[in-house]
Image 1 (spheres, rainbow, N blue to C red):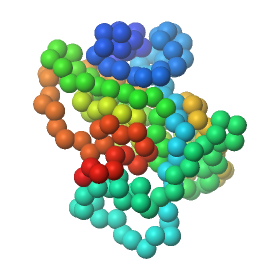
Image 2: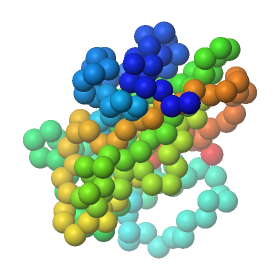
Image 3: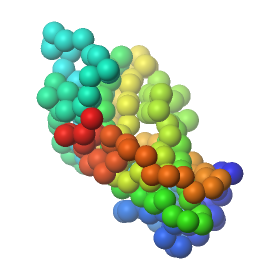
Image 4: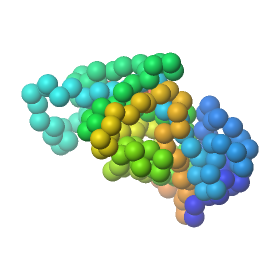
Length: 192
């Protein structure tokens, strides 16, 4: 069951989920839509280096460390932004930190999705792994690619994606997640 804007606010107020630094709590105003909450872009962009002569093999552990070691991290400024060139890819994270605790009783998970205003410009924000599992906490990493013909400016705290929150049926058992607690776009280093 997808939560409405009113139910999302109730779940936050009840402590069933947390969205730190949310831009407002009135369900009829930004950052809420009728069945989602918009999240903003953080300040770090992780740019995978294309000049590294390696092949990715996900059978090997610690993708976060590999990305940290083989990427350039830039901090973007409110007054300058970052020009995402046409047909280029970056990792970024949300400004907001989310927490979906596993508790007896109400339990939630979410899906992070792009925004239609960005999609119409050719910007894909989160394209293959939209699930935010119950038990996850941290910022949400966004895989952003510019498929459009024009450069696109990314600014900190611009609305970049939407979070669709769903009620989980039954209480899950906590399972390992290599990205739980992440604060950087590439994830948590030291995890497998």
